[in-house]
Amino acid sequence: MTGMLPTLAVLLAVAATAVAQGRPSEFTGQDVGEVTAGPGAPSADGGAWPQFRGARRDATVPAAEAQGLLRQWPAGGPKVLWSIDGLYMGYSGPAVHGGRVFFHDYDDEGRGLTPPGPRWMVRCVSLADGREIWRWSYRRQIRVNHAVTRTVPATDGTHVISFDPKAVLHGLDAATGRRLWAIDLPAQYGARIPPWYNGQCPLLDEGRAIIGVGGRQTLMIAVDPATGKVLWEAPNGAGHALSHSSVVPAVIGGRRQYVWCTLTGIVGVAADDGSILWEALWRPGGGGAAAVQAYAARSPHATIVDWQTNTAVAPSPVVLEDGRIFMTAGYKAGAAMFAVQGGPDGRFAVKLDYTLAHDQFNSDCQTPIVHDGRLYSVDFSVPPPVPSDPKGYFACVAPGDGAVLWRHRGQTFGLGNWLLVGDVLFAMDGDTGTLHMIEASPEGYRPLGSATVVGGHEAWAPLAYVNGKLLCRGLGRMVCLEVGRP
Picture 1 (cartoon, one colour):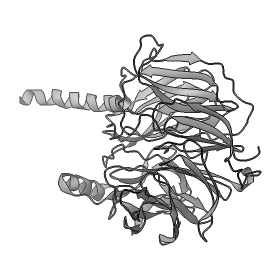
Picture 2 (cartoon, one colour; picture 1 turned 90 degrees about the vertical axis):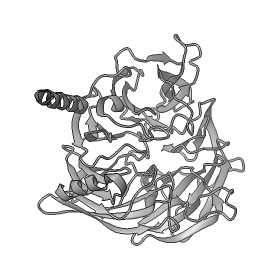
Picture 3 (cartoon, helix red, strand yellow; picture 1 turned 180 degrees about the vertical axis):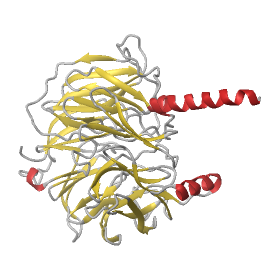
Picture 4 (cartoon, one colour; picture 1 turned 60 degrees about the horizontal axis):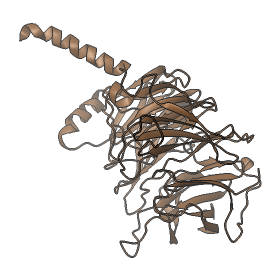
């Protein structure tokens, strides 16, 4: 047996290199999937909502781009410009660029296709009228697990970056739908598909696609959108695993970086080379405690903190202008504020500023919005009077100490999503598909209007805003609403 040890070591080294470099899989071949063309054509609208939470990844539209917003609706609600019914159960919100709307869908039978069978899809429709321009689909069995589709594509107008429920990353041509490349994170990096499937939305930043991997050796990758070439790989010494949170760009201490939260901790990765700048790790317990503590002891950038996410983490980090980062998560995790500082030697340090217990503030799935130095979010910390009643009250929080300035108990929002246009919040009641228009004010909840626009339950998809148009998706229906003048 001793004579076999050098050979075994070589094999293990080769296997580790193969995982780091990537191996092909049955879902990444050039002949996988097919494009079906439709009758639609791109509109002349030049606006864009190019990815999850918009161009800046903060779910806001500046006041300068919000001119002409209607602050009152007629009795029947905002005008419906077009709608698409019959979508398969999902929470995939739209991305918009160049008059095209991109989103995910699913066909559980593959009707009319050869060979038939379940198909996962990227669809492209016209922003003008909702008619389909193209759809790309490939055979993929995905069982319903709180619906099927749940991520938002990212687009630069030339490419579409799509991350499917089983953690395969696809690059497509935005004009034709032709798939250009694919990366299978479980097969190529040893990433684990999280419970309820992948919920991370790809980030496009400075001409690169940024994806949290959570693989055996790789934490995060930067990818060329045109070719799928991996430009850098961030190391995963702490063993972060893929959950549902998405990567957020930030400039802290003069250094551009990508901030990501997992079930293990929150981390900052250098945008230029993928090096780890700082890492706050949850205080471990159980069998993995010794390994995490040993890693933190030898790492120049890791700190163990007394806060942690539980079961899953869906909200994204909220990066404030002073380098602090607000994080919240469901399953009674509460919330925490982290302070990140860069030193003159280029090294970064992170510390836990404060924490909020789950009965003080807790957003289960969606990410708070920052406006005029305040955080706006649906808060699950206060239960309804009757436990079986709908949950989630809109609240305004002071980020300095986490104090709740107000919490409106007259309306619940469930797991619905929201965005901000100027000083107006559009917030979806996730339990009924009713859209609410609210003035964002630290003084209190100021409703401006409401209308049932998609109906039904589990209307959880992220919203998108482009030049006076608001796109909303319910579980099986998407609508384009006129909420302002272009």
